[in-house]
Image 1 (cartoon, rainbow, N blue to C red):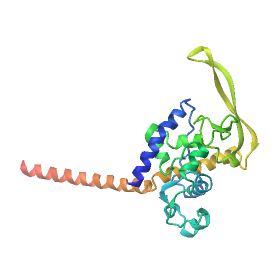
Image 2: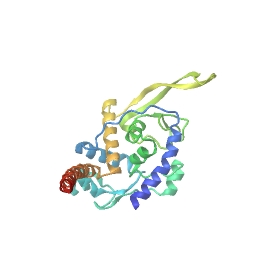
Image 3: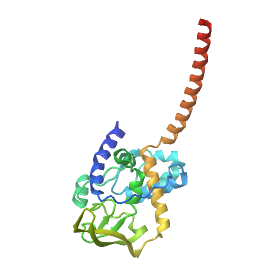
Length: 254
C-alpha cells in the first residue's frame, strides 16, 4: 500500500516535470546497469551521498541492499551516516516546511521516480540520465543553476563537484514556426571550472546512479523475470499435455 501511495505521488509530480521539459530537449539513452552488481553498489553509494540529503526513498529499506550483494556490515560502514539502522527506511531529516522555504517546493520521494517517468511518458531512465548530465550555471536562477531537460528547475546541481561548473551557449535564431520571432538555440556547454571527474567518468557515475534508481523502483524485477520464464515453460508443457489429452479423448469418441 505504501509503495502504491509513493507511485501515485511520483506520477502526480511527473506532469509538472514534463511541462517544464516542454522544450523537447533530446534524451540520451541510459545504459542498462540494473543487473550489474558492482554498478548498483556504486549507484547506491552515490544516491546516499548526493541525493538522500534532500530526497527520501521511503519505500526502500537499507537492508534491501543485500539484494545487490552488500552485507549488513558493508551497509553500516558505507551507507549509514546518521545513526540509522540497517532495517530503517531511507528517509531524510529535512522537514517539508524548510524544504519549501529553501527550494520553493518539497523535493519528491525518489523511491519509484524511474517507474513513474516510464509510466507517464515512456522516458524512464533516459530522462533521469539526461537530466543529471545537463545542468549548467545560470545566475538568473535562485539556486544559480538551470537544466536543459527541466528548464527553470528548482533543484541545485547536487553533483557539481564531480562534473564541475559549465555554462550553456545559446545563439539567436529565427523561430521555424514564425520567422518574425527569434528564439534561443542551444549550441552546447562550456566548461568554466573542472570537476573531480572527466566527462566520460562522470557519465559512467551518472549511469550507475540511474541504474540504482531504476532498480530501486522495482527491486524484485529480476526475480519477476526469472519467475515469468518458469511460468511460460509450465504453461507450454501444460498446453502440450492438454493437447495430447484432448486428442486421445476425441480419438476414442470417433
